[in-house]
Amino acid sequence: MSPITRPRGSEGFPAEWKEILDRIDRIDPIRYGTTRNHGDGAVSVLSPYISRGVVSTRFVAERLRAVGYRTEDLTPFIQQMAWREYFQRVWQERGDDLNHDLKHSSDHVVSSSMPRRLMEGQSGIHSLDEMVNQLVTTGYMHNHYRLYLASVACNVGQTAWYQPARWMYYHLLDADWASNACSWQWVAGTFSSKRYYANQDNINRFSSTSQRGTFLDLTYEDLMVADVPELLRERCSPALTTPLPEATSPEVRTERPTFIYTFYNLDPQWHSGEEGNRILLLEPSYFNRYPVCERTMQFVLALSAMIPGIQVVVAEWDEFIRDARPGKVLYREHPANRHFRGDEEPREWLFPEVSGYYPSFFAYWKRCERLLRHHL
Ligand SMILES: Cc1cc2nc3c(=O)[nH]c(=O)nc-3n(C[C@H](O)[C@H](O)[C@H](O)COP(=O)(O)OP(=O)(O)OC[C@H]3O[C@@H](n4cnc5c(N)ncnc54)[C@H](O)[C@@H]3O)c2cc1C
Image (cartoon, rainbow, N blue to C red; front, side, top):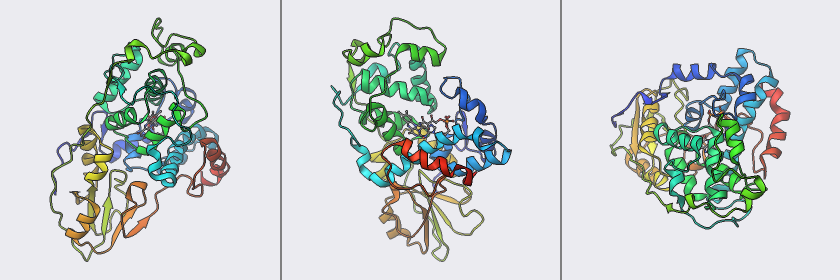
């Protein structure tokens, strides 16, 4: 079994079940609805646990419902979780298309490389720079600043979305390629009807700042036709590699079922209490394709330590099957697992009936909203 080097989780993100439940219990869906776009709004900071599959969107919604909130009070929060499910459905249906412009091609691009100063937190937009620094030091960034960053990179800086998206994903504890790629594409206008812009007034409003004179201090009409600002012209393409733990050989008792955990399924309640082999499979090919930083990998290992008896295996699926020869194998459905074979179980969707490809979130949400009362 590989050693778990930092079992306490990441700073601000403990890998302890009780703390995770407390975090859900602290959600105030009513304040969330009115403040979530503000830098200091009542957001849940739950995504690292949802993305890593420690808790599902359904689990969170049901726990909130049990507190006694009315469906209408919960709706703003549920709607945001539905964005996550929507993007997951897009990945399920469109597969690797996610890595290319989904609906419209980029017609506004001068470079595929990230503006260096933006990535280094030196764009001169104070609140955004602060949040970029927070991203690289903690692995978390508030949704509105993700939007600002993507807007400055893709639309103001005229950069193709793919490289900056990979850079942000690399640093996020909640790295989820569906939410990430689709959100970047939504901002860049390749998966939406228009590009998303935020000017300095907008940033000041949601950051409680009063900064003036920046390259974003323009009207929207002027911002949309402006040349790439001098500050964003220097480009870079950082090398992104995943520090995987050392490969070791697991002990697998073939008469027992083998439960496969992954980067996207670290649910300690999944088949808990049943006897079996528990394997966290980290496939190098996946992490070469979608690299994550040291902090994220340590977070994954720390979360996996909540699962009794788990063994960490660094190998491709075929290698693991060939070498360990497990008997019955169980895993949860995920677009990154299409090549797994065995008993595939569904994920805990909030809206399991609303599947397939919807060209827009609002078409998808319309169907979900009708089902909301049955579910909660
Ligand atoms: C450019 C960009 C990149 C993103 N990359 C990722 C990513 O790699 N992984 C990831 O999990 N999310 C990503 N998001 C979505 C969103 O920013 C985060 O899920 C959210 O900020 C997480 O913080 P929270 O848990 O405090 O959210 P809250 O506001 O408290 O929301 C509650 C939950 O709803 C879901 N959610 C909320 N907003 C969104 C959204 N816009 N899209 C999808 N789900 C949402 C998340 O599961 C979140 O935990 C990205 C958004 C943008 C604009």
